[in-house]
View (cartoon, rainbow, N blue to C red):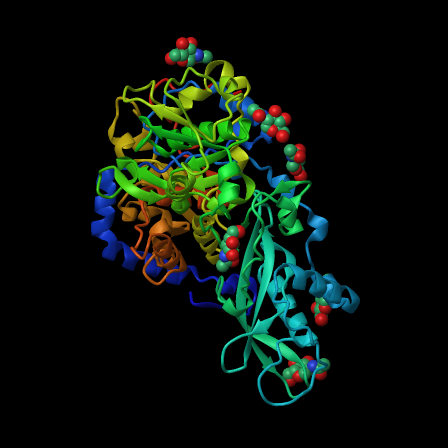
Length: 581
Ligand SMILES: *[C@@H]1O[C@H](CO)[C@@H](O)[C@H](O)[C@H]1NC(C)=O
Ligand SMILES: *[C@@H]1O[C@H](CO)[C@@H](O)[C@H](O)[C@H]1NC(C)=O
Ligand SMILES: *[C@@H]1O[C@H](CO)[C@@H](O)[C@H](O)[C@H]1NC(C)=O
Ligand SMILES: *[C@@H]1O[C@H](CO)[C@@H](O)[C@H](O)[C@H]1NC(C)=O
Ligand SMILES: *[C@@H]1O[C@H](CO)[C@@H](O)[C@H](O)[C@H]1NC(C)=O
Ligand SMILES: *[C@@H]1O[C@H](CO)[C@@H](O)[C@H](O)[C@H]1NC(C)=O
């Protein structure tokens, strides 16, 4: 699966090889799979059901979230919902903007495509569309004819995506026989909001009669010379962002763009000293589930926004043992491993606490900056609105559950502090792994989510789960929903993927571990997260696995869930099924 040959689309993906790789990998991975299995993290609840409030536009969202605000968090090992889940996929369905073959066939429109794209995704530097000189030597990637054949090849080859903009091609390999080109796309029937960026290498031949033909298109993100670092944006200023990220005022993620999530710095002493800050310290939230973390963090962020203060945050997260391979809570994880800090930094006022305390100790005395300490969560944000001191510090005690940060946002506060979900998106580095997997499957696959693990063993709470997710039951459960011969992505916490071998009779199966090259030592993810982590390699942990597995499933054309679809057992154990609305 190194590259796609430019032949009709079905041939660009070779299921047989993947199947073999899978078998090989399973052998190699037996031990690590076993370890993971013992952990029994459950891959979860990619709840794609029509009645799910999470699929409704954000207006309905707040009422849904408010209603759960008092819930104590079950030890829930699912992927936490984030703001990007709540963006309506419709917000990106501006189909009139998609570029089609007919645009490219008509030369006037083509130059329009090119001009648009130069501003958007491509390399702006070169703009000398020389007329074709039919000579030997390297292919001139700036030639319009070359550009046209590349665009045409891309549109013909990738039938399951819509193209939005093409970037001007850049030089490809050293041999002068290839060009790199970037484009923005979204899958045909997008289930999630946002755009994706791809850039690939095109091998090109030039015929004696001066025409060009694309003979091969490289794999996802192979066209590294067409990759461009985004222009930097000023914090908090949406308008500075590329207009296409935002339709009708809504800012949308662009997966596959380079990430710049460096920590914000305060420019000057006077800026720092005139600032107003809020910090939360202590409390019992640390090392809880990711859902709990977000619920608490968003309360703090909501309060900071309400008070017009900068939130001083701790970017170091503790990963709960249910997601760690050591089976222990693990300190020292970076917020940026899991969430999109660039988006947060650019849309809200936040500072990292290490930087903050450094500046504070430098300038506090000199500028008489005052600290206002709050030790009782029952002191509401409303009561703090009048406080003029530079820093409000909420200190939380040692007795659970009164020391949870989210207690601040309960009661009368609930109607005042709105948790700013729109500020929290999933890590785009993780989402890029999701997009890589979906691209390898040509954005044309179905998915089944099979929860087994500890739940299948617990017949008290889940009496039918084990039987209902056995290979035979699975086969009969999905055979009239998913056509024979399809690519089937199996998201599961079942460590032994050979367990699913019977599915191979009908489907080409794929598992997360088939794609482990996307996070192994040679991957971009590995190098980038290592850089964030002061040069220490970062483990692709259980939470990341659940996250990626869930998101890949959600992008499938057809998606079958364990609960509701395969079994009548309830997700959280016997008699816990939510009433269908
Ligand atoms: C929320 O929790 C508090 C304290 O645990 C309780 O007194 C209150 O009734 C709960 N509210 C709702 C709506 O369940
Ligand atoms: C989204 O689009 C679908 C079909 O295009 C339509 O049925 C649905 O009402 C739209 N939803 C929203 C929230 O606009
Ligand atoms: C575009 O032109 C090609 C030949 O150059 C032709 O095969 C194709 O049908 C045309 N497509 C459209 C939509 O006009
Ligand atoms: C140019 O040559 C190629 C290969 O010989 C051929 O396929 C193509 O049709 C020719 N194009 C024109 C416009 O003559
Ligand atoms: C990353 O973003 C920050 C803040 O917007 C900016 O100061 C910095 O120059 C950017 N770095 C790169 C490499 O673009
Ligand atoms: C925060 O700023 C907004 C707009 O500047 C203002 O309307 C609001 O009263 C301020 N809130 C507080 C708590 O100071």
